[in-house]
Structure formats: structure tokens, C-alpha cells
Length: 334
Ligand SMILES: CC(=O)SCCNC(=O)CCNC(=O)[C@H](O)C(C)(C)COP(=O)(O)OP(=O)(O)OC[C@H]1O[C@@H](n2cnc3c(N)ncnc32)[C@H](O)[C@@H]1OP(=O)(O)O
Image 1 (tube, helix red, strand yellow):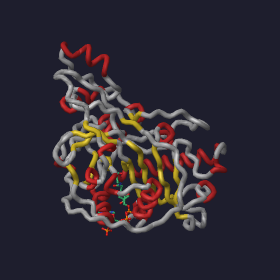
Image 2: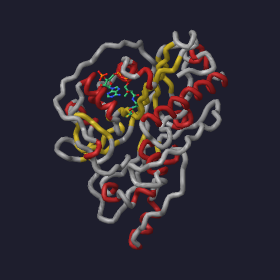
Image 3: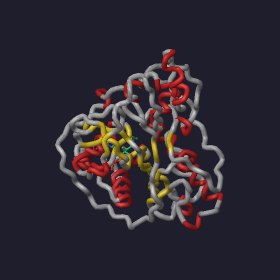
Image 4: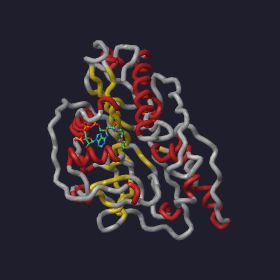
């Protein structure tokens, strides 16, 4: 994807690591023009990614990156476009507090690094760019692919994980995150906490939606898969520095539309009023699961410096079957 400005001056490195500051280089700090250009690149790639995944609105934009503790790895090819460079794609990751089911079906509370969005421009797919981005992120975050959780991976992404990392056997979950067998095997007891005990019947716990689910839920007028596409919003003007929240919620999702209020039985009405979140439209539908979890999505990254990039292949040995998205139960985003 090309832009009417020199990408090489905005992104000096082949892969830039962007966080809520939207700064690819130290010298870009405080340069509004570089920040605006960075935002333009993220917004345009985010729109293309949403289109490629048939999402009704982008789950990645400069505004969302500013508002969350996520890392976005942006890959450019500096040679193309007459030496001005093209944006090849990005990989977005972040830590999420998740309640997952282990192989015995027990709820465990975890906070893994999650792949939240991943996109390589159409004309450059299947050229190894996705793998280059993924390897870079693994080195940067010092993590193995099987230790990560994957937010509703597409069929292309599942094929990618199987091909490059031999990740194919997922552990069934009640949400749309996919984890593979090694996820539980390679985690210490300290990293996996048993989920809080089941709440008494009738109590409705709040939870937040992931962006991917929120844009679907908020924009669909018809039941999935008959979702209509709508125009995607631009990011709001960028502030030089912007406060960011630790929680992901519907508030960060584009194109909010009024939603019908769920029917709450009178004996639950007070409870509902005090505990509802902005994802109230889904609370009633998913209250069975939400009794089990008190799930706020937290981004708990600490600042890290960028180590050198290596692109070593990391074959993995797993022996499982590809998760079937259609076989998963209705979505509950944590
Ligand atoms: C949690 C999430 O982010 S889910 C969303 C994932 N993103 C998308 O689905 C958007 C559209 N797809 C893409 O942007 C890219 O295909 C990515 C990011 C998934 C992979 O990036 P690429 O640069 O294509 O990957 P790379 O070239 O390193 O690896 C290629 C392998 O990925 C998989 N893959 C890539 N494209 C396809 C495709 N069209 N159909 C099936 N498998 C594919 C295959 O395993 C492929 O190997 P093969 O060509 O030998 O079959």
C-alpha cells in the first residue's frame, strides 16, 4: 500500500514497533506531521484488514492504538514505490485477561499475549511477509507461538499457524479465542489461576467485549452471517499525548448504534442496573456464561525496548486438528 509521502522518513526501520504514542522513531516524538502520517498508514491498513476479514468496521486504527495498551508491528518495504516505500502489513498484539478452559474443561484465569489483528496487503500475501512479522514479534515479546492466544483467527491465519508452527490442535473454548495444546502444558501454575467459584444463580456479571466482536455485535442488523458492511470511520484528530485506558470495551469500537435493551426479569433488574457495562446488549444473551466469569479485558503491558530482529524459523511439534470456527459456541468476548 503506497502513500503520498515518504514512508522511509516516517518509518526508518523495516519493522516498526508502535504503541499508544504512535511513534516509530525517537526523533518523531513531538513531530505532529510524522504522527499524522503514521496515523494515516495505520488507519488505511486497518480498513483494508477489516475488509479482508469481512468485519463491518476496523478493529485497528490509530485512535484505538492510542487508547489501548497494544503493540503494532508495522512492516514496510522501503525500496518500492520509487524508493518512497510501501506499507506491507501489520501484526497487532496485546495482553488480555481471559478465562479459558483447559484440556480437562476446568476454567482457568490467564493473561496471555494475544494476536488481535494480522494483515498483509493482498498483492503481497504468501510471500513470507506474514512470517517475517510474526517472527519479529516472537523475538520482541520473548514468547512462543503456543503460549499465545488468537482472537478469532481466520482460515488463512489458521493455515499460517499450522504451516509455520505446526499449531493445529486447539483446546475448545467457549469464547472466540483459540489456544493450542502447548498453551496449558508450558505454563507454570502461577500463570494459570483457577477461575473464581461459580456465582449464585441469577447474578449477572459484567464483561467487556473485544473489538472484533464488538464491531460485529454493534453493527449487525441481521443475524450473522447476514451482516451488512458499513462505511468505516476515520480516526479522530490525534493529540500529541493521549491518556489511554487499561480496559477494552465497546467504547473503543467504531460506529456505535443504539441497541435494543435486553429483557431483564424484574427480580434481576436492580442487579442488572448496577452491574451492567456498555456491552449490555449481549449480557442477557450470554448471561449463562457470564455467571462464570468476571471478565474485564485488561492490557497490562510494561514498556520494553526493542531488541534486534532475527528471523529464525521456529518449527513446533503438535498433533491436533484444525479448530473449526463453526463448531464453537456463540461468542462471549472477555
Ligand atoms: C487474530 C487475527 O488477526 S485473524 C485475521 C488474520 N488476517 C487475515 O485473515 C487477513 C487476510 N490474510 C492475510 O493478511 C495474510 O494471509 C496473513 C496475515 C494471514 C498471512 O500473511 P502472509 O504474508 O500471507 O503469510 P506467509 O507468506 O508468511 O505464509 C503463507 C502461508 O499462510 C497461509 N495463507 C496465506 N494466505 C492464504 C490463503 N489465501 N489461503 C490459505 N492459506 C493462506 C498458508 O499457510 C500460506 O502457506 P502456503 O502459501 O504454502 O499455503
